[in-house]
View 1 (cartoon, one colour):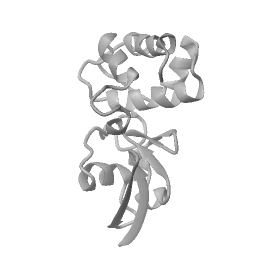
View 2 (cartoon, helix red, strand yellow):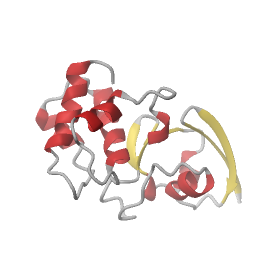
View 3 (cartoon, one colour):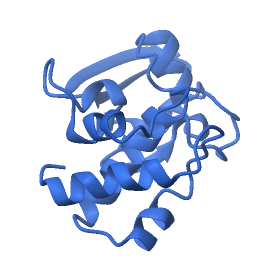
Length: 155
């Protein structure tokens, strides 16, 4: 067991757990933030994507000991109180959500993309989202949702 401190969704957390525990399991099972999903457990699908210091990372591949002192953002941390983040609203408005399982990872990857490139081309959006798989959509609506936020302003 080891004490590990990190910030998650703006809140400082200190947990005493085995440092070899996956970040995904800590987020879901220890902290109770179930928006982060496990898909493949191998870093291939993007369902478990979180932002670590602003970068999209598959949390199934990260050991909690690796996040000491880092800032983590999950899907629960991007809204403004009760108001949805513009990407969350755009995914709903554009019909980019089907079963919803991949959506948290998709939105966080899109947020990281727009934070680094506020006005990406369609090609840049597709490339930026390439680590996230969706079995329900043809990605067209997802791209349209991201484009709607680009032209709509706030990211």
